[in-house]
Image (cartoon, rainbow, N blue to C red; front, side, top):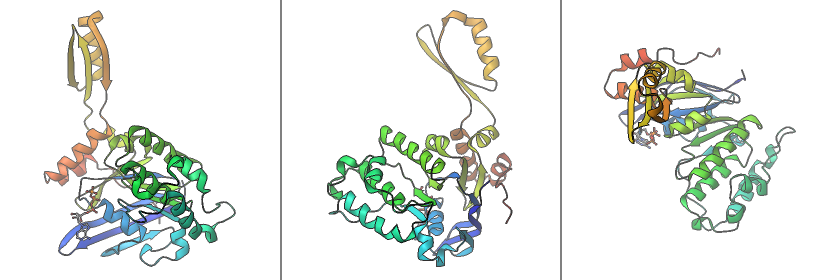
Length: 310
Ligand SMILES: Nc1ncnc2c1ncn2[C@@H]1O[C@H](COP(=O)(O)OP(=O)(O)OP(=O)(O)O)[C@@H](O)[C@H]1O
């Protein structure tokens, strides 16, 4: 396991009289890709902005790359990359000019094993903006603008990358390319990545670990398959028979399919068997919380936060 890159203990945030974070504990180790999930308004952006040093917390301990983000130095900032939820400036610049300019900021922070900044042509190619590199930013579509946001986040070749809903507005092709990019950043550059998303399929594809934020705390911390295994495993079986589509949710998919074949044999077509997924686990957990059944949710996901030695 890599060294601890992010460590938060009893992190709290209050806006006016509203407590949004009421004691968040989390740890990220080098090279991990962690997805922070949670319903709208749960406090994901707030958490990420505190870890990025863009928002001052109300209380608690936070250490990111060995420093407190609230007081961290310029060289610390150069080691982190940020993709905010919305970033709407420089409308009359071009992607190439903006990335070149921002890239220069990182040049003094190059190290023998990490050349900074990224080569700008390579970066434009990587995020699929080569053809649009010299066009004004205010003429880009929403999804193209988002690709530029991702490029801005990685132009300094960060050791730690924060992404807040990075694929909002991406078409399926752009989404797939982005997933490929995240894998490359994690595996080749050993970039540690913390991202928020509402796309559970994305979390399933990318995350080495998933955190669920609800009721102001991290209520689940596990691998995708670990979380899915903890919901009462119903299996969904779909098939076509005599021109009609059938769907059944059953506790034991294998036994059901065996019986279905024994009963109807050759008439069964287009069989699909789907075990409980991250989505089922996530929805079960959030519904328990929203219904005020925190105890039941806690039991469902009792083995939370894998403790990391300080
Ligand atoms: N600057 C602020 N002042 C007051 N309240 C705020 C501020 N920023 C966020 N909030 C409130 O804090 C709560 C958490 O917001 P946050 O944006 O962190 O949630 P989120 O989990 O990222 O939500 P979403 O999934 O909708 O992006 C919300 O109720 C929001 O209204």
